[in-house]
Amino acid sequence: MNDNGNELGPLTPLVGTWEGEKGDDVAPSDAAGPHDRSVATSCYRERMVFEPTGRTDNHAQTLYGLRYRTTAWRIGEDAPFHEELGYWLWDADARQVMRCFVIPRGVTILAGGTAEHAAREFELAATLGSPTYGICSNPFLDREFKTVRYELKVTIHDANSFSYEEDSQMELAGRARLFHHTDRNTLRRVL
Image 1 (cartoon, rainbow, N blue to C red):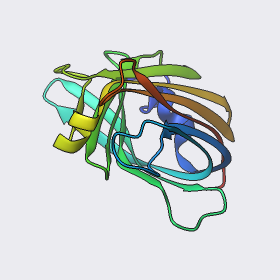
Image 2: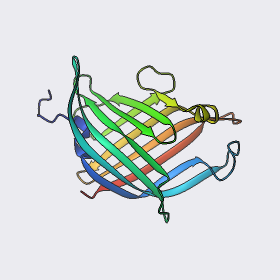
Image 3: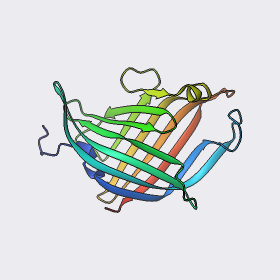
């Protein structure tokens, strides 16, 4: 248990509902077929909800977490273009922050990193093939848009604002270099 009684560690400030309207998404364009490798840049608005889950015991390991969901809409559009469901977890003894989530395109990621209990900034990563912090995709995405590395940096600015920078590094069929699918946004507490 933590010395200040705060079980969620660096995740504590995230509890609540957040919105941001200055998102920036750089992704492979989906305007053409799977082998067209043009780039699409989108501005988006986003809503994130974080709810405490309580304590989870894995034998000697104790985790505290947040259930979360994210929905993002391109500016000016009513239908979301991105959603996620998952958990953020804190292991105080190992000083590990984890984020495990599913994207309804057929991708699952468990990312993690080391952080101090009161950290206001932390970074998480996952690598394809890792038995711990890894990435799993459906056969089509594995063949055409293989995510080989995922990196996330979270910065808590104050009690009512946080931002993130996300980089999903992908091997695209027919392209020699990695593609950096990036997302970034600053969100403000609404509840």
